[in-house]
Image (cartoon, rainbow, N blue to C red):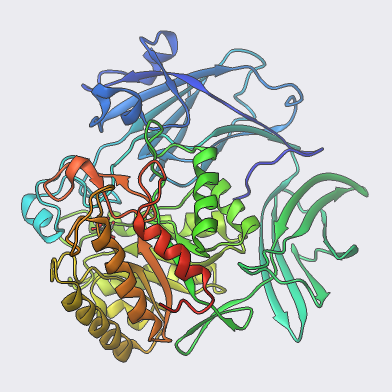
Length: 577
Ligand code: GCB
């Protein structure tokens, strides 16, 4: 799915910033009634409703959004689409009284063709957002008590199966865009390197069987090819490759031609690079790579999970300051703008689906499997052309030792591989050597908290267990390991000597000890600290102030002691402590 852009043949316009908003606690309203009158208050889009209104902090039900707009100048006689970047959780959409359709699952875009419905003036767009937590949704919520115990989530409110606040609303921009009736629908770029020649392969989807051309500019030379059966390939001698240190991007253009004249064009900055798992190593452009960075969240006061460009830039500038080269989009796909910046700034991204907190009991398993596959497919279709995305993560901490779980994940893995065979695919697990699914996944990602949730207060005992888990898991699978989470809560400003849990000293010593153990093992190819920043979560006895304090930065992005330690060691070449 292509991100809308402006050029001579394409126009876009964002629908924002203040929409009308109506809470529907008793589920009384019908779309047809709401077109006429709407007893509304203003709300900002994009942003979560839970942060904008104190009384709606915990509201996870139905709400309606409405806005009106005129057809933008120049859109007449075009193919016109309305595209939502992310609505959490389930969206139903109407335009001018016509039902357009629905989309289940936050964090991924969806769009509708409105060419035949849009009027010149006074278009009314109505969106119903359903944010309920339910056992057959992904991620699931409101489970029976017994299952909550299995998920280690007993007694938290709201009753999620995961450890972050289930923010709701229209979270990313809503964009109207117009194309010529005959246009480029999508294309997939795959790159390879063969004896110092960069190969750029493009598969095109277009709305008509027109002539199409591919162009790429490299070192002031223009490389060109014509598509045959919607496939084209370029060979670039000695290309400047894309990597985290040198994020070289090249301008690729796909054009559609009718009677020799261009009628559509899409420009995409691409990176030429390879990524592969070989033995116990992860290789980028054939070279070993070590991922240093974080699990993160899209989370900020006031805006919640809404897209905020300044916060995105702030996080990149802090990652640059600290010497990180990588992050995981835990526990859901991040905005498309964030990934475009990763391409440009040079970050290696593990892109994760929203399949978090999965369980394998109760009814609803078939629906959860359908959604898990849908999320994998939609994520790959959205992010396939980003050189920064080097690994797909299809789930976080599923209870995979349950009967049926490995089969479930085999199906999702096969589906993902059939769409993208160029990137390693994994899941993130806390089952270690018992995680049967690692037999077929390309690499191993482990979340480990020994010395925190177990061996609490005993760092040395925790380090010993950590080392043992790494060795046993490697012995079992012989695949490269990324420690995708390790961390300890530190309440900012709380100090203790000797180090005690929740102090900044304990967090620093914990992270330092873990990094020491990882640096002794060359099969550990990634160290992702949990978390880059403190973040909001559900209320419960484990989470004072409803905040997870494992950030090495505070929620408003101030460094804790550990951040300074990481800056020192991550900026030193070999990570020596
Ligand atoms: C985990 C989860 C993450 C939590 C973290 C914690 O294993 O993947 O979502 O926030 O532990 O802090 O407990």
